[in-house]
Image (cartoon, rainbow, N blue to C red; front, side):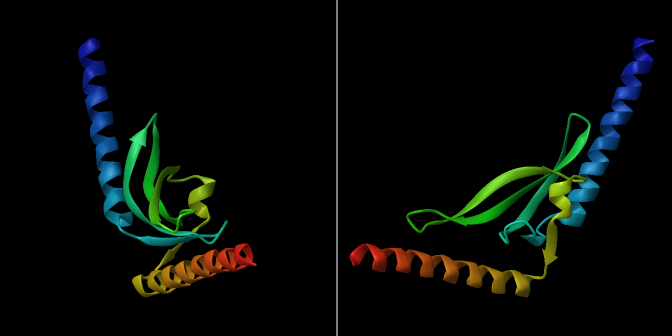
Length: 117
């Protein structure tokens, strides 16, 4: 009985690895825009945890001291958060990137002007 369970576990693990690889190959390096707050980012890879598939990705963020960082997070592949992401082409991503950075720079400039009054 234990041997059968071990074989089944091996088969299950192999299937999970195949699923991770399949979705990673399909989604890796895809650019996206969030329908929630308009933030942009890129998908790194897909992994399994507790029987669910997750996407490891980053959102671009500009910090209070004007540094551009990648804020990494994991979201469920077939969850509600993933449904709110829209795929972008590289050209669309670049356009969104510059619009985002420009907007953030203007916000910082406005704050500096207001504090200087």
